[in-house]
Image (cartoon, rainbow over all chains, first blue to last red):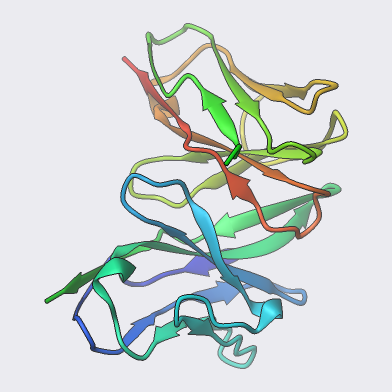
Length: 111
Length: 113
C-alpha cells in the first residue's frame, strides 16, 4: 500500500532561516514524488516533482530511496513562502494514475 | 487564465439527499480526476476519467459515481448523503493522464447536515 507521512502539522520559522519540510513515503515500486502548495485563498498547485530535479522559488527536494524520504528544503525562508505544503506520491489503480497525499504541513514564516 | 472551474463553490445538503458537482477542465485536457479533502487531511483520490472512460476508482462506496462528457467536463454524483461526506471536493485535470502534473480547481465545499 502507498502511504505518505508528513510528521509536522505546523512549522514556524523566522524570515531568513532555513526551512525543511519532512516527507516520508512507503511504496513497493519505483516512486514518483511531488510537492504541492496551497497559498492563502488560492488553489492547490504543483511546486515541484522529483524527476524534474529543478529548483522552484528557491525550494529543492531530493529523493532518498534508502531513507524513503523526499524532504523539501529552502535555505532562506521568505514571508511569501507561508502556505500549506503537501507531499504526494504517484501510483496506479486500475489504469488510472492517482496521487496519495500526506496530511500536509503549514509553514508559517514570521518576521 | 482559464484554469479548472468547479461549480458550485459551496453547497449545503441534508442527510439522505443527492448532490451533483461539476467540473470543467483546462481546454485541451482530456483527463479529469476527483479528490475528496476532509478537514485536516490531504486530498484523497476518488476517480480518474480519461476520454470519457473511468480509469480507476479509489476506496469509496458505490454511492459515489461520476461521468465525463464529450467536451471532457465531468460530474461527480453522491447519493444518500452522510454527515461524513462533508468535505472539499477537488477536481483536477491533466493533458494525457498518466503522471502528468495535476491542475486543480478551487473545489466545491459540501456540508451535509
